[in-house]
Image 1 (cartoon, rainbow, N blue to C red):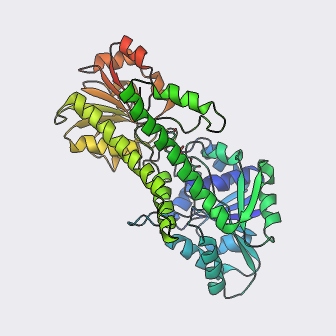
Image 2 (tube, helix red, strand yellow):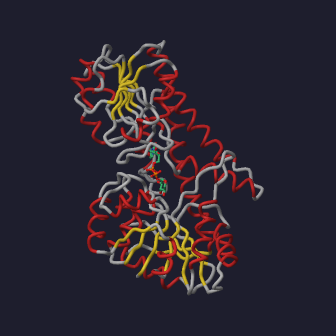
Length: 429
Ligand code: UDX
């Protein structure tokens, strides 16, 4: 099918590439000319495993094209996906100005029936507003349908998540666009759920908030484990074997971050507020998450006492593994707090160092993870990169002035670390 994706961020670009991979003709539109030029020239603005090869392959074959003209994208395709940012406003609600602007641009360019699909994460009832806007600004007065089709991809695993989705949600106001939407997704061989548009929009916020709740739950349990002398990983394992609970998203950590969970939680609380429901449960999820970081910083301060003039090595800057994304990264938050206390940092991340430099200009960026500990008073693990498990622990211990390791992601075994001579402090163990 002929598809256009407006917005080439993490969601739009991965979606466009995966649609091309299954044989659709895809046009990706972005108003950032520099980005479009980079993509047209075979470059890629983000790191996402597997994405670069896919974009190159389909750009070369002509199945995936890039332009900064929304009008061209609308004219040449039957289905237009909106995948633009929906950032938080200072009060926690969602800034829908990009969505509104794109809806107007699509409307202005429409000369025949189109299906306009919202992929961005938006508050319930946004689909109705998009439909109203298109109707108002479409001079040609042609027919159209608005569909909600939320994305559930995780950064770092986005290509895999999109190629093999657990489910595809299609929210509609009438049955007319259903056949085309099913045809688009048929090659992905996933269960397709057709709902009303409001339910589809709610599924996204309810899912992300639930996952965040699951992490905060295990983080709260980790506090109990520390107090009681239990091991949160064993508790999570025992819980997760109950199929009703499941073992995923039960990794205790220094807290969740990223461009989705914090923003979606605030938005969902606000949406509930607007319809007259106080979603206290989710407010508690936020509180537990920020307390988790406070507790981790306290652990470091309690051990090292005064941080002023101390040198601390930090492994991990991205908000999670497999990505270069540092937006709302707990690792960056941690670094900023340590710097505020007067510590000097030596940092390393496999992919996120370039993006971190602007936020942490005074840290020393080290190119090899095994050199980070050199001359430091302590080493901290802040992101769950698999490769950190292969750290040369012997070298790290010898390089540190004192063999102290704070593990915010529970990557190592406490008994093993003690045997190796480390003072090892992790989460809930
Ligand atoms: C999330 C959702 O998973 C995805 O479905 C949605 O479409 C977008 O938001 P993403 O933000 O890319 O995806 O990352 P995710 O893997 O969910 O991790 C979010 C944060 O939670 C990270 O900081 C991660 O380190 C943390 N996390 C995750 C934990 O602390 N413990 C866990 O068990 C899982």
